[in-house]
Length: 431
Image: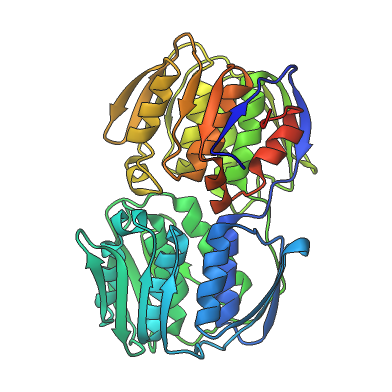
């Protein structure tokens, strides 16, 4: 693939359906739980991407037997019964936030001598609040970079239980990691959220995946207090992973921009993934949304701007921003301050790229306001951020002359994205 892709405008409204690859979020939860389980698990619908490969390679370095069959999207995992064979390891995790946060929590409670490191951007992504929570269980965990950022150094024995507090306003992955790690402690673990909790659907997802592998989490309705009993252990399970709802947003967004209908197969209102809620944003913008046994269908185009809290669907902010360029009136996105510390600053850098299209964008500490203007061609920098590439490519479905730089960055979660987009809208993004 070249250093850029120029997107060709779609000639007709969308009339298509697709089943995206498996959920990254579910895959990178199921993999470590299967590794910790007693017995052999078979995971189906597994996403083949950079992030999931980093998780698999890390678990293999910890001594877990894992056999991927990428052609069948299936991974077989021989669990360790809660005790990794290797108590010392150096783990390279690229820019995979789920891998470093989940494994830092699990290894901090499990005990051993480990070091987790990644690319330069990972050394700018905070993890201090998670490590602070682990130290409340007397784990010896240290962030080596300034500002509480990786690399992470762990030199611990298996920790006792106890009560801990963790911030919920930076990343819900901190809490998810602690929840998954808690059954490894010698005693019961209680977790209290300090301040507001963002991305609650991802926490619910974690609890449901844990339940599928035999561990129950007690929580209050507000998801501010949790208790995990120590007399539980993970059990092997043949587990089916549903399609990725964040990836689905791009195809729904294509219909919102181009008109027509886009059906994403394999997802429904009972999905574990909160990002299916993105269709509610599109409904408010004037699209029609229908849920059936086949999946979820969005019919466009979107026609009006909205004022929306996207704290529970923050991975779809860039997709909504692309749609917002084509509607009447401004779109205001609120309560996504944590997007600044993802693969890139998904507020500041998103605003820079949207302005290249000619849009007027007001940047706020926790979001942005997008004022549609007559569009123009643009060459879009992607900041090694898969979501920047995938979402802003949608603008090129209507606006000629849109080039997406470094298209290979989509390999983080969706290596076949541009091929699937081509087939979905019957265009040739390489022409």
